[in-house]
Image 1 (spheres, rainbow, N blue to C red):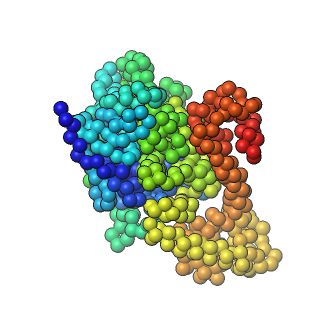
Image 2: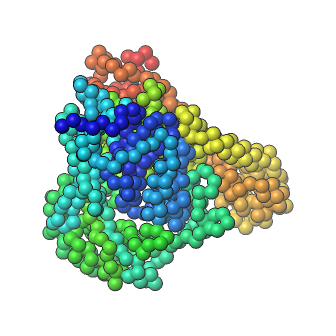
Image 3: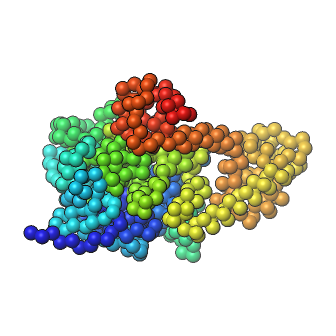
Length: 633
């Protein structure tokens, strides 16, 4: 039977419309490529499969970075937000992480709306069952769908999420699915393994959803948003909490498990797919199921749970911290022993899902595969967990697929440039055998990679390749002019002893003997611009023309000036290693002094630079020294 070819002139095909696929399609299309986004269900584009929230520790920095580069995640998160919180405010600015609670349905609707308004982007609803490869199998040329339609393209980005041979587990029940109510995807794993790819299995889980009308909120601890809510996007007018008709933030709530809850959960362990070996894949270490928690942390009498509303106009509640694959009746009985949930009704039980992934050491730093040219992977297919990690990879895969099609050099973000750079560098060079989640501790240059300066770091880079808009560049220039004016004022103007000494004495700080530069006073512990201006009228008048965001950024740059400069110097050392290029066809066998393990790993990972080679797991400093000497360095 002849195969119908619907269209032959796509530059890029993106398979999957989750967070990775949406960012990949938008980036490539906005850069000028003709893009086809294929999804199994047009009604679930950008669906929040797990918790209704974006950002969090280190993840919020990624969302800011995506926005700074012209991606959509920050804008959609802001416009669908029902609450905003800046986490880790009690710590240093390198740790501050923005987070939103979101309206799940509005989030997906806004994503689809923005994609439909993106030029150069087409859609097709179907499953992709296989790739079209060149006769020698070394280059991708398109895809074949479940209904037998062939789409050809110059590059393909796979963002299959949890759908590749997905199996859903609830107690002793198991059935195929990519998430509840949706079928799994078959064929791609088998084809890729046949041509030489290594694959593995991972698992993730989700908690039961609850009817909010059945919850006793008086028994719970309320957790509201920030009094002055911020937003993710560096563009204006993206927050529902500002403007002429600001919305009131929706609170979350906190409750706890107890020993009775744990005892009920244990009665289901004999039917647990995790404990009985029916699940082979490894789950996320930092987001374990409730049954895993009470086993691993048996000394704890309780575990914290978060009651998270799913939107402005729904009573559905996400029970964060209670992920489970135990039988439905066990989940239900345990649920009703939790304070505030004694009369709780479930909309659906929690479940675990097991799926295929491909160890990311099979990728170049551009996220193009080593085995097949013009084929890119992004998201959970690479072994990551989280919307933000997926979206960051999707953005970079879309950018690099476009650049490859246009025969331009790939864009590689370094570890000192972005959390996205840390994420991809870790995946490509170290790999992962458990779902990878980003933390601030993974970034050695985190004082440079703050959430407040993502636009200054990344928008110029993105603008240079044709993605971030001129409007964004103009906003950066204006922002830098404003905060530099404050810094200049602090370094060239002084505070009077008569105005400030009583304040300094009250907080136990040394008083002034003479006029002292504001910059020097600000460097003291417990001193902030806000406190200084409260006791110095001249300074207060000067600061009236600046917004809080500009003042805060100026303060960070002044208070941490020495630390920032030290990190910048260390980053320059790494940059020099990244400038030492290694040719694709470089022969490591010719180098005397390299051990067999080093030669094997260099052959496998094909590092593009000395810097990348130095971060491959198992490579020693002496291996790098031998390599540098051979390269004449």
